[in-house]
Amino acid sequence: MAVCIAVIAKENYPLYIRSLPTQNELKFHYTVHTSLDVVEEKISAVGKSLGDQRELYLGLLYPTEDYKVYGYVTNSKVKFVIVVDSSNTSLRDNEIRSMFRKLHNSFTDVMCNPFHNPGDTIQSKAFDGIVSGMMVQAA
Amino acid sequence: MADEAPFQFLHNEVIQYIYKSADSGDTEHGRNISTLESMGFRVGQGLIERLTKDTARFKDELDIMKFVCKDFWTCVFKKQIDNLRTNHQGIYVLQDNKFRLLSQLSAGKQYLEQAPKYLAFSCGLVRGALSNLGVKSIVTAEVSIMPACKFQIMIQKM
Image (cartoon, rainbow over all chains, first blue to last red; front, side):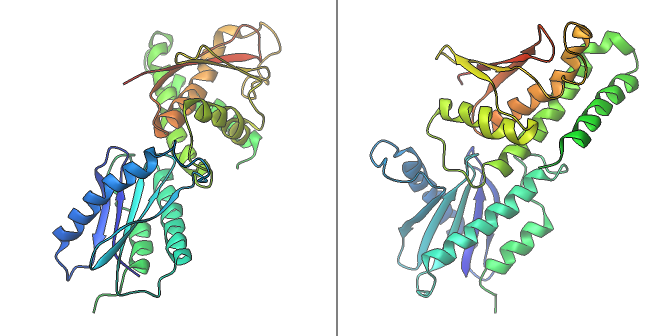
């Protein structure tokens, strides 16, 4: 269960950020922003690891003392960032991957919506629903 | 993806509609073409998002062009591009010897002057797809003998 989920556009501005309302939201915005650097580094590290499958899931970007940050980039250079609580050790890699899959599918649906202009913030209620399903339930 | 026939009919009707609803008829030829092209652009953006959902990340520009020639073209037009040429300096020429949207129009030189109308949407489609993949480009198309056509893609370096 995620604590914060963010969708960031190709030009590195947020299309959608949602975090737990009880916490200090700015801290999450900052965490997501700094994780962008790590994402860039992973994307451009083509030369060194050609054995790497060049897949979309980037894995654990970096751990902080309270949180772990995971990244995923689409072929259209839109980045998804998920922040989870470090104390939640039961979350396995596969579950994070499936969360990203669901996010990507939902994002694709948003892009195909003719009323949505690419580059605008995401206003879709369906997307909101998917994200709510993945966030930790607020007390 | 959707079957061919409904898409072709819809495409032809869209072109007729745009031309009929333009106030000054033929003198606005350029504007109608741009309208069609920008429609194709938006569709291309959404379509490429759906198509690249499961593919691996692209290595470089040539990789992207090959994807467009094979998977993208197969998905939209049910066949692959017949010939891809490049000068390795940002110009790519895609040759399709039997372009689906033109094959019902004629099999030679008849209706050649009407061809640009029918290619505008597809040019926009390619431009939108490339733009969403991070490649800024200008796409033009030319026909010398129906139904073969050549799409020329000029990559714009930012």
